[in-house]
Length: 76
Image (tube, rainbow, N blue to C red; front, side):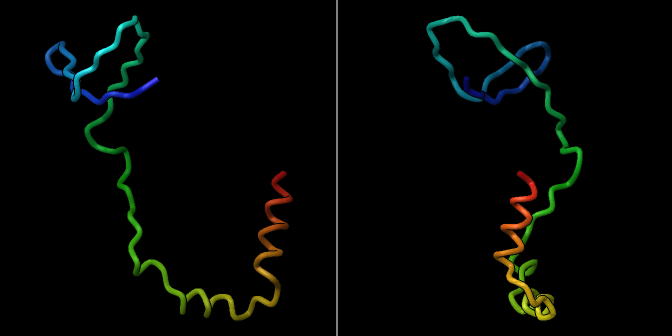
């Protein structure tokens, strides 16, 4: 299975790259909206702060590693 991008216009599909295959394939054609249904939020370096994380975790007295292990075990 492979994917090829293309454009449908006036009853014709134009592929963005040439395809050469020597056998018959079944296809699934999906028409994508031009705009995404929701805006993508991108993260930037300013979204991460070592100092903020340190400040928020000062009151935590347990082990983060133990907390992660416990959480993952509960999901099994």
